[in-house]
Length: 219
Image 1 (cartoon, rainbow, N blue to C red):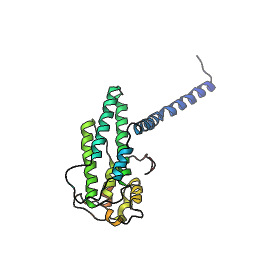
Image 2 (image 1 turned 120 degrees about the vertical axis):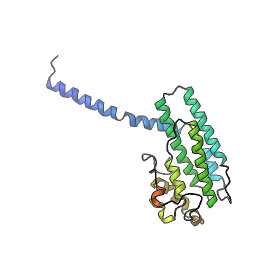
Image 3 (image 1 turned 30 degrees about the vertical axis):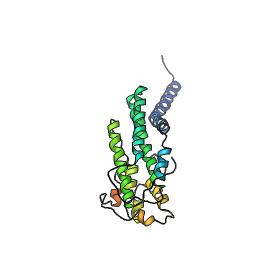
Image 4 (image 1 turned 45 degrees about the horizontal axis):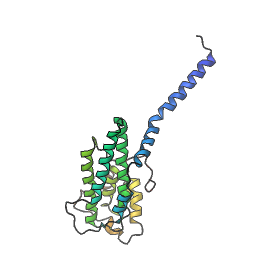
């Protein structure tokens, strides 16, 4: 069938439009999966538990906080549910990655609203995050990185003038954490022998996490 030049141009234009639409499908799917993942776990009670507990402890043992076990229990149930539903492997991975990212964001949300934190309290936060990551490695085939919460913990050991060198989203939380506080100097500034020395660059190793995530407090 002989086509006219006008028909050829029309078909070529339609093909370009189809290709353009298809190219954005992966990004759209990612956003959809992200929204689904955010509704899979009710993290508000855990955030409230973090926010309301005392972090001005005098000593740190080897026992992590109870909310860590709650989080691991929630993730374990979610993984079992996704398996029982027969969710395709690639979608399962995306959903789990997003769930872990949301958990990191909500940990920082809880940490940043505590009223007073001692050096030992900062060390306990670090212990909690490491224990959580160890537990997630046992539950997940591959643990996605959690630089958002890791950078926040590192930044707590930095002198206040170096905080802005860190991940900008974590800095938003740190700004709320320090602003107008009578104990600000005890929160950021004193380095601790419990963690490696954190230079401004070192505190930001791993980048800012998910660059397309909303700014702090806009979850």
